[in-house]
Length: 235
Image (cartoon, rainbow, N blue to C red; front, side):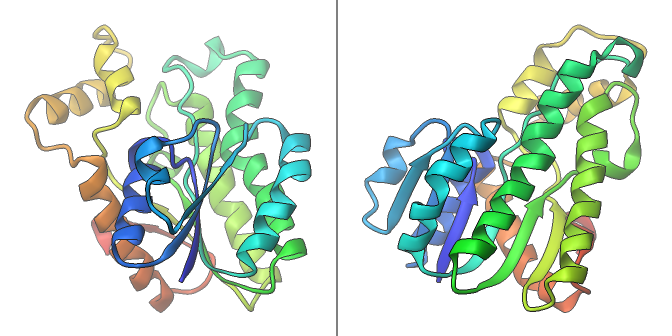
């Protein structure tokens, strides 16, 4: 299989790349920074892209995609959290930055895939429970993931030849959680306390464990209507 994954420099993206490479698939990785561990694999092809630079994506991605020829599975994993604070404290510039990376870069990627690939069998956008929970403090991140879910649903209606889904991968012991763990206690944001307690207890899955869980969910997603939002904890 030819598998395209964004955000392969670390975390879940790195875990997914390793999972598929270990099973003999060709992985086409996209992220701002390279990953020397992945580049040792002969079946790993890498493209350095800043996903907030839409013009850079349009200039660099087509040649990379044409080398792939086709994509059996595209996992749109790259994303940013932004700062945990109240909505009223967020500037439009901060919200725009999160939306650009978490939503609009994926639109650019999807459109370019259809322009430059022979076919795309499945597209999975990595979403979050934050898209529906609306916990205080998650501001632009929650908005971006809710918008991502709807964008995926809309593409599913337009591109019936491809199976689309957005999947929340559950908790992952990642750089995002390190940031959350570093924050001071704030009674405004009770969800932070729960996350810190889970991380402290050692019950938060590693990136590798989360990648395996998500990869299995990707297979199950084919049994669901194209365009669905799914959560690995409910599959």
